[in-house]
Image (cartoon, rainbow, N blue to C red):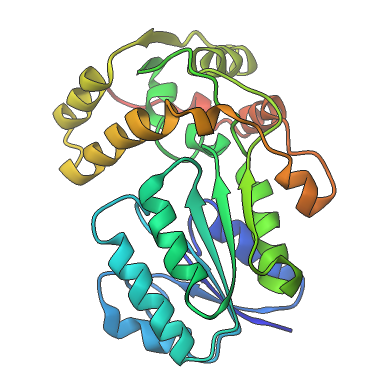
Length: 277
């Protein structure tokens, strides 16, 4: 039995990791501001108690490893983890993000056993995150409408992370996780509309127009900057136009198909919930 701290344990990948670890009988500590002991990325005094007695730590940094301050936070956390005798770190990183790679280097050079999990854009961004409100409203406007993305399912990321947390054979590895098919934004919205039997209006806008729309809807400046960065530096990046086989390498099976994610999510009714403009 392992003692595992899951930072962001209520988030998209974190809660899935917590569930799988608990099902296997491991002792899991959720790292969040609402947990006991508390973990807060903005309050370093909370880190010692959260890390105390832990064998392994899953690290996900909010909102993204690319934002200012992430590098310093990861550096401080790894130092505290080493001090506390943590034996394994698994870092969730972004595929094609140079700033994230700087954080990866800190973890890899920490002297602690580690695995880096670089993920492509999540399928769940359409059901649990960025794009959900627009889909529910029925009017979606996005940049780079015809850029191919090999969306990866959060369940696949979680399963890979659990394997890495529990086994030393993954130490020193960098896994790049993608799905097994490409989809554009335009195709994604078409598939969601078909699966939900709804009309969803889709149009392409520039990155500048999209970020301006976010500002007009009161989205904080830091988040607007991050979205602009993800569209310009990450999504439209040759590295993100490449599919890998690392999900199959680790799990011994193919990645979950995006169309299966769409069909199963449609059954939950989340895309049919009405929202106000």
